[in-house]
Structure formats: C-alpha cells, structure tokens
Amino acid sequence: MAIVNVAQAAGGGGAPGVAGIKVRAWARVWQATRPEHSKGLRHGAWYPVVRDERADRVTIQVGEREVDVPRRILEITGSRPSRFTVVHRLGFVPSRGNDRYRLGRHYGVCPKCQWRFGIIGRPVQEKCPKCEFQGDIAWWETV
Ligand SMILES: [Zn+2]
Image (cartoon, rainbow, N blue to C red; front, side):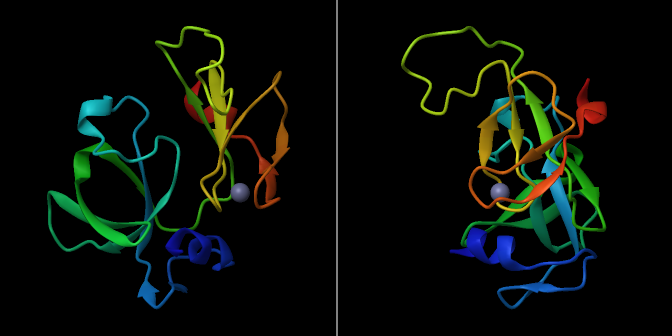
C-alpha cells in the first residue's frame, strides 16, 4: 500500500508528502553493504526518509513500517531519484529454476516502484515492466 503511494507521489524534491508523510530525503543501501548489515532492505531501492534528527541513525519508510537504520549504511539524497539503479550480484552463480524473476548477474531497480527486473545487454534507457516508468540506467554509479 505505502509502496503504491510512493510510486504515485510524482515530482522531485523532498517536499511532497507520501501518504501524509513528510519526506525529508531519499535513501538507499550502499552497494557494498553486506546482507547481514542491510536490515532486510532491498539493494538498489530508494526509500523515503521520514526522520533525520540523530547523528548515527535515520528513519526510513519501508512499506507500512518505519525502520531505524544506521546512517553509515545509507546513501542519502535530497531529491527524488529518477534513474534505475543497477545491482551487481557478486556471488551470483547461474542456476536453473529457483530464481523466480531470473534476475541474472545484474538487475535493475525501478526508482519509482522498486520493482526488480533482469537487464539484457547494456541498454542506456529502460522502461519499468511494472509501473512503466521510463528513465536512464545509472550504469556509471556502480561499475
Ligand atoms: Zn516501476
């Protein structure tokens, strides 16, 4: 529900509210963060920052919940990102059948709806298969 609202909150900047929440900034987990430290957050996905008053911790909105996250694992930006993040799976071993979305060695994450999808080749732009958001793929961020 909240994720749908995030997708519907159009426009950049930190000012527009998301389902009545004042969004202060946007945050995602640094790529290099190990899974055991990322608190179940989806790599490559941007989350609204709802509280940012403490030096060491930031509160972000994850679906219906507010989650306190150590600041050191987050990359924070003031305006709403509009580019697809590329997530590289360093330990990826191709396998048959058990990867539900066939994400492969790297995959894209939609900045609007956080949907993950496999990327074939090295396209410059992509269209989200779920919400149809269209934008650049930020290859330069992570390679
Ligand atoms: Zn999307």
